[in-house]
Image (tube, rainbow over all chains, first blue to last red; front, top):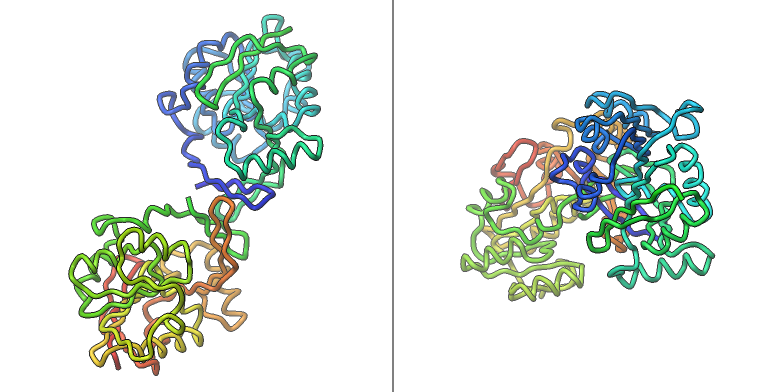
Length: 218
Length: 218
């Protein structure tokens, strides 16, 4: 099991097999969000290529990006054709454009916070074709939050941060990532971050607290 | 999932449902060791009463000991009749004696190290009836050890400790135990610790690296 350690001492575990899961085993909202994919795809934080491989199989041209050399190696081994080590700022050619950009697997987390998130959304908008679309998955951290979670949210707000910014590191056996801020946003918060970013929420694919937001170029 | 964090930064996860598992789901060596149980039983570190409840159901008189108030509460709720909060030094009457003493669920870990382990075995021998028996479960930490594990063992030995002494704490959501030393011993190491303790190994119930040692009063 993969262990996510939060800066208040909480630990959460997740089954890393999700990174390899076939379509039928995905979270329902991600499965259902696939019908919104069109054209050339940029999979931001593609990990082992779970989503990218599915979309390549459906005939899409896919570029996968990941900052983890291990993830890039595995995604390539598994057959994803165009996987690049780095970020949208370092690993793309200046004129590359995409019809669909993916932030799935809770990769809304990469927004990190309100201001940084709007900056990232703006940068992604510049990579989108005129009919470009963004699929962004998260879950509402306030939906069914425990008392401990509510305390964490309150401490965030007292520091001027969105409630659902979690400072985490991922550990697995002897490995540990550096600490990073992952954003879990309510639907309203995500729509608010998108304002002025070049994107606007067109729809939500809902599954309880979990959702995939479908954003179109504003 | 329960997370065990080691002092070198390794994390390991385990399914806490094992604490509640019925006999058919136990590790095979523990299941097979049950035929060595006789008479009145002391279950040291009984947790939620996994083993104690099974033995009560088979007609044994069982005393469960645990230093965790939560474990004691749950074991009582699940029906274990005589569960006591504390250790063999604090929670037993002076004249109580047992025919079988259990250190299962890797509770050889409670020996902590060579010298402390011999002391604990001596104390347990004084609680045993003349035909008393001790069932002690562990796994051989050197069997199939990874390179990382071998490094950990070497560092232990360089400090004059048995290779398989792991400094651990257990974490679960927002909970964390203090750091403690848990001993994982090879069969030979366990037999050596038992020398002069009032116990001698009579048999091993083997299952690959895992085993339950059956010790009798020497």
